[in-house]
Length: 421
Image 1: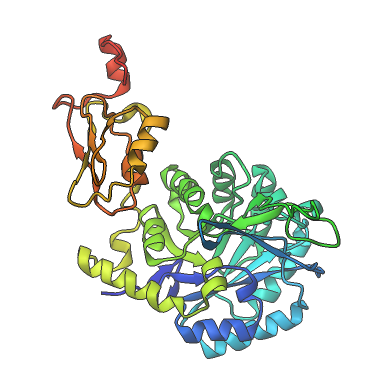
Image 2: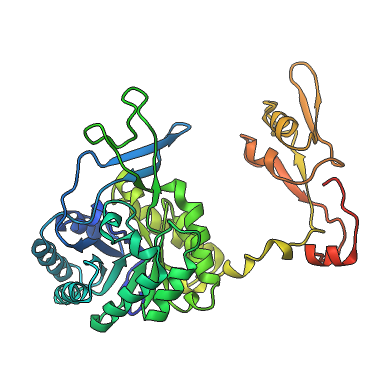
């Protein structure tokens, strides 16, 4: 059994790369990460000299969980380019077996891209990642998400890059669009070797109710920031799935990004088509040693499922995503409450009674109330199961309406009557 990954000929001992972000901004951080066991690094974006502001980060906390969502207004690396290039060379000498990808964001002209690519390739880096996604600061300069939001500009820049690049090129897409497919298609047609997604989502995480200024606070002002962390994972998975489904974009490998905090998250991204996965917020919150749990968890799951390599399950879930009109409307669920596990809290009843289909009966009693499912009213929506605080107390039991498969298009053609459900 092996977690080893081959991404465009770039080898790493496991599929976990640290994403281009503060943890990959300098040698001391990167060495600490690689010593802990990370499979690869995407060095923080290099480009023209910038100056960052203070403060830079904010977060969304939810239900006692700190940093459910993370927001930043930090720009690309503000360290001198020569120092970054020197440190990349030094890291490569110490860890030649780890993936070293360097994120780039040059000024929007062919010469600037060619010059930056040449300097980075001279370090011995294994690949380049084009930052077409930064949603703040760089967009005002016609860079970052301003490139990724326009498929034709993205195509043009990738064409410039491919004229000069001799190592694999990964194009990082912005989620600040209705669909990532148009830009994805454009850059694949322009010659990019791979894609990565998603970059951060433009956001306002909250407002200080004393100062009236959104976070983060910079001398009485703020700006839209880039949102990431566990809260964005469902959005990232959706965008990844659309890339994996499209006949043009699915031709190239993908590095998945967006809210990956556990080995389960990583497996989900890989099941939807990622060859490697990139992590940032979880490492910033918990430190680099999380790589041990990330690897152990994936390895144990693979052993349980009988997978010998990660390629055995990459993309395995993509065929199960279809159009709504193709779903089987004869397939039906009915909730079941296990009375032995029920703690009689009534949360399922309240949710169903107030916000769903009044499908749970309440029987008042002493010392506690009893809740049962009205099977004739239950539509199998899952709300009660999702609300219940006790694992496996409420389960959804299959009750087919009819044995044969029937989708909505056929249902309409047959002229069958609609019912209340």
